[in-house]
Length: 281
Image 1 (cartoon, rainbow, N blue to C red):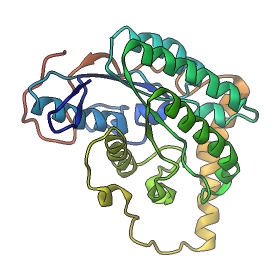
Image 2: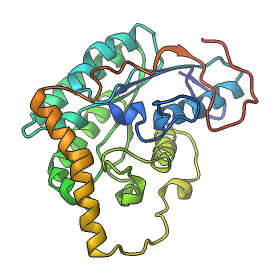
Image 3: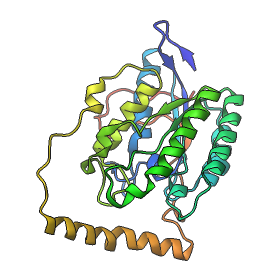
């Protein structure tokens, strides 16, 4: 990382590791079939703009794969990330572990902290993220205590090792179900857009906080019959296949590889081609 004379941080080699949240699921990529954009790609475009303003090249890799547990994130993904000598790594893992019937929260924190120590010793800055607050999330409300403990552990690790934190727990706009895809696990395009701006803010850059923190306009209350049909559809389409995969010991990401496995400049698929690509730094 370098620092602009005005004090804003500038990174030129950003690597994202994690699971489906960082892969960007449910934020479709308009340029590629069965591919996603997501908050990390959107954050990379913001950081690229900052680097370009300083006439610096910018490279970005995204190694996150849906279904991965923390062991993969802090194992093979972390090893691959460190081989690229990044100056910024976003490491968001443990969400799939938290969904398991039993999870060792202290063990998760210990493995995450060991990974942070490795990254910080290499000179890289680290962006961590808390889980969301599931207070208003129906069946997922049962996860609230786990999410709260994991959030506290993440803030402690960040404080001890000088990391940035993307505070999803405190992003109240994400409590609105309209920010979530039909599977109720992954964010919509609007949700990913807001998270990217929250991440940029967490990294020390000025943003229009009202743009990403403001709640959506009030929605009409659905009829009870429609709600019940929606719940039944969700169970059949999303919950049942997830349970089946758990029983079989398989993952939605078993045949999926990282979407951006090498550091490269990435053009924003939601903007018309304009600025020339910067060579890898």
